[in-house]
Image (cartoon, rainbow, N blue to C red; front, side):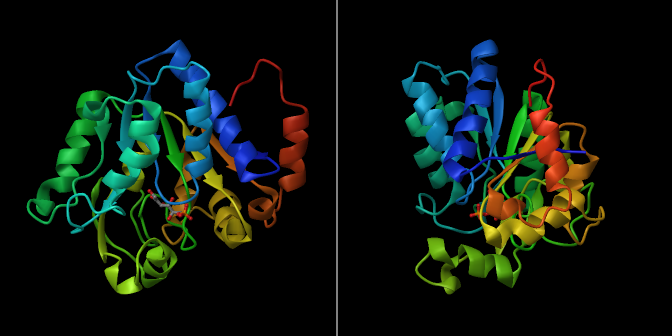
Length: 260
Ligand code: F6R
Protein backbone atom coordinates (compact mmCIF):
# COMPACT_ATOMS: atom_id res chain seq x y z
CA UNK A 1 0.00 0.00 0.00
CA UNK A 2 1.06 3.52 -0.64
CA UNK A 3 2.09 5.71 2.24
CA UNK A 4 -0.50 8.48 2.50
CA UNK A 5 0.52 11.73 4.19
CA UNK A 6 -2.11 14.39 4.80
CA UNK A 7 -0.66 17.86 5.43
CA UNK A 8 -2.57 21.03 6.24
CA UNK A 9 -2.01 22.88 2.98
CA UNK A 10 -0.45 22.67 -0.48
CA UNK A 11 2.34 24.93 0.77
CA UNK A 12 3.10 22.54 3.64
CA UNK A 13 3.00 19.58 1.25
CA UNK A 14 5.30 21.35 -1.20
CA UNK A 15 7.80 22.23 1.51
CA UNK A 16 7.73 18.64 2.81
CA UNK A 17 8.35 17.04 -0.58
CA UNK A 18 10.96 19.65 -1.49
CA UNK A 19 12.86 18.99 1.75
CA UNK A 20 12.94 15.28 0.92
CA UNK A 21 14.15 15.89 -2.64
CA UNK A 22 16.79 18.36 -1.48
CA UNK A 23 18.13 15.88 1.07
CA UNK A 24 18.37 13.23 -1.66
CA UNK A 25 20.19 15.67 -3.95
CA UNK A 26 22.65 16.64 -1.23
CA UNK A 27 23.38 12.95 -0.68
CA UNK A 28 23.60 12.24 -4.42
CA UNK A 29 24.09 15.36 -6.58
CA UNK A 30 23.41 13.41 -9.79
CA UNK A 31 19.87 12.64 -8.72
CA UNK A 32 17.23 12.22 -11.43
CA UNK A 33 13.95 13.99 -10.83
CA UNK A 34 10.80 13.28 -12.81
CA UNK A 35 8.89 16.54 -13.08
CA UNK A 36 5.19 17.09 -13.65
CA UNK A 37 3.48 20.23 -14.91
CA UNK A 38 0.05 21.76 -14.22
CA UNK A 39 -0.86 23.48 -10.95
CA UNK A 40 -0.28 20.65 -8.49
CA UNK A 41 3.54 20.49 -8.37
CA UNK A 42 4.00 24.29 -8.13
CA UNK A 43 4.26 24.30 -4.30
CA UNK A 44 7.02 21.68 -4.60
CA UNK A 45 8.92 23.88 -7.02
CA UNK A 46 8.47 26.80 -4.66
CA UNK A 47 9.85 24.62 -1.88
CA UNK A 48 12.78 23.61 -4.06
CA UNK A 49 13.55 27.28 -4.76
CA UNK A 50 13.69 27.83 -0.99
CA UNK A 51 16.02 24.82 -0.68
CA UNK A 52 18.24 26.26 -3.43
CA UNK A 53 18.30 29.64 -1.68
CA UNK A 54 19.30 27.83 1.53
CA UNK A 55 22.26 26.24 -0.24
CA UNK A 56 21.23 22.98 -1.96
CA UNK A 57 22.95 22.81 -5.34
CA UNK A 58 20.71 21.38 -8.08
CA UNK A 59 23.15 22.01 -10.94
CA UNK A 60 24.01 18.34 -11.48
CA UNK A 61 20.59 16.78 -11.35
CA UNK A 62 18.85 15.46 -14.45
CA UNK A 63 15.15 16.07 -15.05
CA UNK A 64 12.65 14.19 -17.18
CA UNK A 65 9.18 15.65 -17.75
CA UNK A 66 6.12 13.44 -17.94
CA UNK A 67 4.50 14.85 -21.03
CA UNK A 68 4.18 17.54 -23.69
CA UNK A 69 1.43 18.86 -25.91
CA UNK A 70 1.64 18.00 -29.59
CA UNK A 71 1.82 20.75 -32.14
CA UNK A 72 2.26 23.93 -30.09
CA UNK A 73 4.70 26.32 -31.75
CA UNK A 74 8.23 26.14 -30.30
CA UNK A 75 8.50 28.53 -27.36
CA UNK A 76 4.73 28.66 -26.74
CA UNK A 77 4.45 29.77 -23.08
CA UNK A 78 2.08 26.88 -22.24
CA UNK A 79 4.19 24.20 -23.87
CA UNK A 80 5.49 21.99 -21.10
CA UNK A 81 9.04 22.67 -22.26
CA UNK A 82 8.42 26.37 -21.54
CA UNK A 83 6.69 25.62 -18.22
CA UNK A 84 9.53 23.37 -17.04
CA UNK A 85 12.11 25.98 -18.07
CA UNK A 86 10.19 28.72 -16.23
CA UNK A 87 9.31 26.81 -13.06
CA UNK A 88 12.22 24.44 -12.67
CA UNK A 89 15.26 24.80 -14.94
CA UNK A 90 15.92 28.51 -14.57
CA UNK A 91 14.96 29.15 -10.92
CA UNK A 92 16.75 26.04 -9.65
CA UNK A 93 19.84 26.58 -11.79
CA UNK A 94 19.57 23.24 -13.59
CA UNK A 95 21.84 22.51 -16.52
CA UNK A 96 19.46 22.91 -19.52
CA UNK A 97 21.31 20.09 -21.30
CA UNK A 98 20.08 17.73 -18.56
CA UNK A 99 16.42 18.73 -18.73
CA UNK A 100 14.41 16.40 -20.94
CA UNK A 101 10.87 16.99 -22.19
CA UNK A 102 9.15 14.83 -24.82
CA UNK A 103 9.31 16.41 -28.26
CA UNK A 104 5.82 17.52 -29.28
CA UNK A 105 6.82 18.95 -32.66
CA UNK A 106 4.62 17.64 -35.46
CA UNK A 107 7.67 17.02 -37.60
CA UNK A 108 8.90 13.60 -36.40
CA UNK A 109 6.05 13.04 -33.97
CA UNK A 110 5.82 9.36 -35.01
CA UNK A 111 9.16 8.68 -33.32
CA UNK A 112 8.86 11.07 -30.36
CA UNK A 113 7.81 8.34 -27.93
CA UNK A 114 10.57 5.93 -28.88
CA UNK A 115 13.17 8.69 -28.75
CA UNK A 116 12.07 9.62 -25.24
CA UNK A 117 12.13 6.01 -24.06
CA UNK A 118 15.66 5.67 -25.49
CA UNK A 119 16.78 8.80 -23.62
CA UNK A 120 15.29 7.50 -20.37
CA UNK A 121 16.91 4.10 -20.83
CA UNK A 122 20.31 5.57 -21.77
CA UNK A 123 20.23 7.71 -18.66
CA UNK A 124 19.22 4.89 -16.34
CA UNK A 125 15.70 5.98 -15.42
CA UNK A 126 14.17 8.28 -12.86
CA UNK A 127 14.86 8.26 -9.11
CA UNK A 128 11.78 10.15 -7.97
CA UNK A 129 8.77 10.89 -10.15
CA UNK A 130 6.42 13.70 -9.13
CA UNK A 131 2.83 13.06 -10.21
CA UNK A 132 -0.40 15.00 -10.19
CA UNK A 133 -3.72 13.38 -10.99
CA UNK A 134 -6.36 14.61 -13.42
CA UNK A 135 -10.08 14.61 -12.69
CA UNK A 136 -10.33 11.76 -15.22
CA UNK A 137 -7.85 9.79 -13.11
CA UNK A 138 -4.98 10.29 -15.53
CA UNK A 139 -1.35 10.34 -14.41
CA UNK A 140 0.92 11.81 -17.01
CA UNK A 141 -1.64 12.14 -19.76
CA UNK A 142 -2.62 8.47 -19.62
CA UNK A 143 -6.34 8.84 -19.99
CA UNK A 144 -8.78 6.05 -18.98
CA UNK A 145 -8.17 2.89 -20.98
CA UNK A 146 -4.39 3.31 -21.07
CA UNK A 147 -2.51 0.06 -20.83
CA UNK A 148 -0.56 -0.53 -17.63
CA UNK A 149 2.32 -1.60 -19.85
CA UNK A 150 2.21 1.49 -22.06
CA UNK A 151 5.39 3.37 -22.90
CA UNK A 152 5.88 6.96 -24.07
CA UNK A 153 3.58 7.62 -27.01
CA UNK A 154 1.07 9.99 -28.53
CA UNK A 155 -2.30 10.02 -26.74
CA UNK A 156 -5.56 11.83 -27.38
CA UNK A 157 -6.69 14.02 -24.49
CA UNK A 158 -10.24 13.61 -23.24
CA UNK A 159 -12.59 16.56 -23.64
CA UNK A 160 -12.69 16.75 -19.84
CA UNK A 161 -8.91 17.18 -19.62
CA UNK A 162 -8.98 19.81 -22.37
CA UNK A 163 -11.68 21.67 -20.42
CA UNK A 164 -9.66 21.39 -17.21
CA UNK A 165 -6.56 22.74 -18.92
CA UNK A 166 -8.33 25.50 -20.87
CA UNK A 167 -7.56 27.79 -17.91
CA UNK A 168 -3.97 27.99 -19.14
CA UNK A 169 -5.03 29.12 -22.63
CA UNK A 170 -7.27 31.89 -24.03
CA UNK A 171 -9.93 29.37 -25.06
CA UNK A 172 -10.50 25.62 -25.17
CA UNK A 173 -9.98 25.67 -28.94
CA UNK A 174 -6.33 26.44 -28.30
CA UNK A 175 -5.80 23.39 -26.08
CA UNK A 176 -4.11 20.73 -28.18
CA UNK A 177 -6.01 17.49 -28.77
CA UNK A 178 -2.91 15.32 -28.66
CA UNK A 179 0.03 14.94 -26.33
CA UNK A 180 3.14 12.82 -26.00
CA UNK A 181 3.14 11.20 -22.57
CA UNK A 182 5.20 8.72 -20.64
CA UNK A 183 3.14 5.56 -20.46
CA UNK A 184 1.95 3.91 -17.27
CA UNK A 185 4.65 1.31 -17.81
CA UNK A 186 7.24 4.08 -18.08
CA UNK A 187 6.01 5.78 -14.91
CA UNK A 188 6.02 2.50 -12.98
CA UNK A 189 9.74 2.11 -13.72
CA UNK A 190 10.65 5.20 -11.70
CA UNK A 191 12.18 4.14 -8.41
CA UNK A 192 9.91 6.25 -6.20
CA UNK A 193 6.54 7.77 -7.06
CA UNK A 194 5.30 10.85 -5.22
CA UNK A 195 1.68 11.59 -6.05
CA UNK A 196 0.30 14.97 -5.00
CA UNK A 197 -3.32 16.12 -4.98
CA UNK A 198 -4.93 19.23 -3.57
CA UNK A 199 -8.52 20.37 -3.26
CA UNK A 200 -11.96 18.82 -3.18
CA UNK A 201 -11.98 18.55 -6.98
CA UNK A 202 -9.34 15.81 -6.77
CA UNK A 203 -10.90 13.85 -3.89
CA UNK A 204 -12.82 11.36 -5.98
CA UNK A 205 -10.01 10.55 -8.43
CA UNK A 206 -7.51 10.32 -5.59
CA UNK A 207 -9.61 7.86 -3.57
CA UNK A 208 -10.20 5.74 -6.65
CA UNK A 209 -6.49 5.74 -7.53
CA UNK A 210 -5.26 4.93 -4.02
CA UNK A 211 -7.99 2.62 -2.75
CA UNK A 212 -10.16 1.60 -5.67
CA UNK A 213 -9.82 -1.45 -7.88
CA UNK A 214 -6.70 -1.57 -10.05
CA UNK A 215 -8.14 -0.88 -13.45
CA UNK A 216 -7.24 0.73 -16.76
CA UNK A 217 -10.46 2.72 -16.30
CA UNK A 218 -8.66 4.56 -13.49
CA UNK A 219 -5.10 5.00 -14.74
CA UNK A 220 -3.96 6.47 -11.41
CA UNK A 221 -4.67 3.08 -9.79
CA UNK A 222 -1.49 1.84 -11.50
CA UNK A 223 0.39 3.30 -8.53
CA UNK A 224 -0.94 0.39 -6.45
CA UNK A 225 1.40 -1.88 -8.42
CA UNK A 226 4.50 0.10 -7.44
CA UNK A 227 6.60 -0.92 -4.42
CA UNK A 228 7.43 2.64 -3.30
CA UNK A 229 4.69 5.24 -3.46
CA UNK A 230 4.20 8.31 -1.30
CA UNK A 231 0.89 10.16 -1.60
CA UNK A 232 0.99 13.71 -0.23
CA UNK A 233 -2.33 15.53 -0.08
CA UNK A 234 -4.25 18.27 1.69
CA UNK A 235 -7.34 17.50 3.82
CA UNK A 236 -9.77 18.40 1.01
CA UNK A 237 -8.17 15.97 -1.45
CA UNK A 238 -8.04 13.33 1.33
CA UNK A 239 -11.74 13.75 2.18
CA UNK A 240 -12.96 10.69 0.25
CA UNK A 241 -10.26 8.29 1.43
CA UNK A 242 -11.86 5.39 3.27
CA UNK A 243 -8.81 4.60 5.38
CA UNK A 244 -7.75 8.14 6.21
CA UNK A 245 -7.91 7.49 9.96
CA UNK A 246 -5.53 4.58 9.49
CA UNK A 247 -3.17 6.74 7.41
CA UNK A 248 -3.07 9.30 10.21
CA UNK A 249 -2.48 6.53 12.77
CA UNK A 250 0.34 5.11 10.68
CA UNK A 251 1.96 8.57 10.44
CA UNK A 252 1.64 9.15 14.18
CA UNK A 253 3.29 5.79 14.80
CA UNK A 254 5.88 5.91 12.04
CA UNK A 255 9.21 4.37 13.03
CA UNK A 256 11.73 7.16 13.50
CA UNK A 257 14.24 5.66 11.10
CA UNK A 258 11.74 5.40 8.25
CA UNK A 259 11.91 8.02 5.53
CA UNK A 260 9.33 8.43 2.79
C1 F6R B 1 1.14 17.13 -15.99
C2 F6R B 1 0.43 15.86 -16.01
C3 F6R B 1 -0.98 15.73 -15.53
C4 F6R B 1 -1.36 16.65 -14.39
C5 F6R B 1 -2.85 16.53 -14.11
C6 F6R B 1 -3.28 17.42 -12.98
O1 F6R B 1 2.46 16.97 -16.45
O2 F6R B 1 0.98 14.92 -16.44
O3 F6R B 1 -1.19 14.39 -15.14
O4 F6R B 1 -0.61 16.33 -13.26
O5 F6R B 1 -3.56 16.86 -15.25
O6 F6R B 1 -3.18 18.76 -13.38
P1 F6R B 1 -3.27 19.94 -12.34
O7 F6R B 1 -2.13 19.77 -11.43
O8 F6R B 1 -3.11 21.21 -13.15
O9 F6R B 1 -4.58 19.82 -11.66
